[in-house]
Image 1 (cartoon, rainbow, N blue to C red):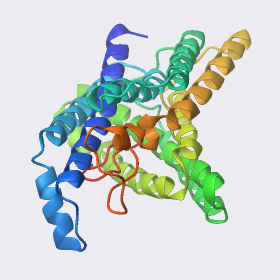
Image 2: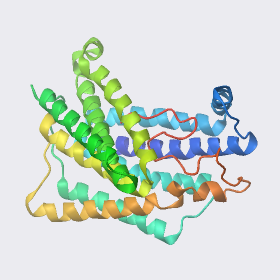
Image 3: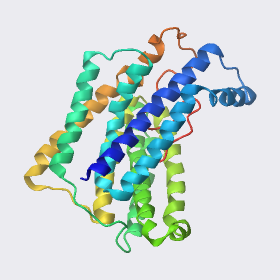
Amino acid sequence: MTILTVLLALLSALGNGAASVLQRRAAMDQEREQPGGEGLGHAVRRLGRLLCRPYWLAGGAAMVVSAVAQVGALAVGRLSVVQPLLVSELLFTLVVGSLVFRQRPDGRTWLAFVMLAAGLALFLVAADPSHGQATAQNGRWLPVGVVVVLAVAVLGAVARALRGAPRAAVLGCATAACFACTAALIKEFTGRFSDGVAAVFTSWPLYAVCVVGLLSFLLLQSTLRAGTLAASQPALTLGDALVSIVLGWVLFGERVELGLRIIPEAIGIALMAVGIVGLARSPAMAGGWDADTPGAAEPSAAAPAAVDVPGRRDGPGSPGRSR
C-alpha cells in the first residue's frame, strides 16, 4: 500500500461522511423553518431553497472532494486497497456528525467505532494486497460483466420473494456488487489516461461507469426502502469491499495473501461486520442526532427520520453518489 493511495482513499471516505452529515443538517434545518407542502411545485421550490443553504453547499463541496479523491486513489492504487478503505466513511460520519449535531456518542457507539477501525486495519495488514495492472487483462471484462449481471439479476429475483430484513440484506448484496463494478470501471478508465485524454473519452469504460453508476443508485433506493440500515449496511459496506477484492484479482491481477493469513483476515472481516452493525444502530444512522439537535422539531411524516447512509445520497436534496 502506498501512502498516497491510503491518504486519497481516506480523504474520499471523509468527504462522503461529511457530505452525508452536512446535507442532512441542511435538510433538517429547512424542515424546521419551512415545513414542506404537498405536490411537485412545493418539492421543486424546497429543493431550490435547500441548494442555497450553507450546510448543503458545504456538503456538496465535500462530495466533489470525495469523488475526485476516489478517482485519484483508483488511478494510483489498487482496487483491493481503495474500496476496503472506504469502509472508514462510517467512522468519519460518526465523528463529523457528533460535531455538527453537538451530541456525544454513547459508549456502545464508540465500541463499534473501535471494532470497525481495528477490523479494517487488521484485514489490510494481513491481506497485504499486491500490485496489479493499470487496466484489465485482455478479454476479462466481458465474462466478468456477464457474471455480475447474472448475479445481480438472481439476487433481485430472490429479493422479490422476501420481506423485511432478509430482503434488505439481499438487495444490499446486489447493490454492493454494482458499486464494486463501478469502482473497477473507474480504475479501468483512469488506467487509460496514459494513452491521452482522447482515448479516455472515446473508449467504453467512461460511459459504462455512468450506466452502472445509475443502476447502483436505483438499486440503493430499493435497498433503503426494503428494511433497516442494520440489515442492509453490512451487506452494502462489506460486500463492496469483498467484491472489489475479487474484481481486483480477476481483472487487474491484484493478489491478497492467503495461507495462515486467512485467519487474521477472517477475524478482521468479522470485527468490521460487528462494528458496522453497531454503527448502523447508532444515532449517526438511527436519527437520534436529528431528534436531539437543539431547536429541532419532533419528527413528522414530512420530515425524514434518519441521517443519510454514509457515502450514499438518498436524503432530501442529496444528489446521489458514484462508487
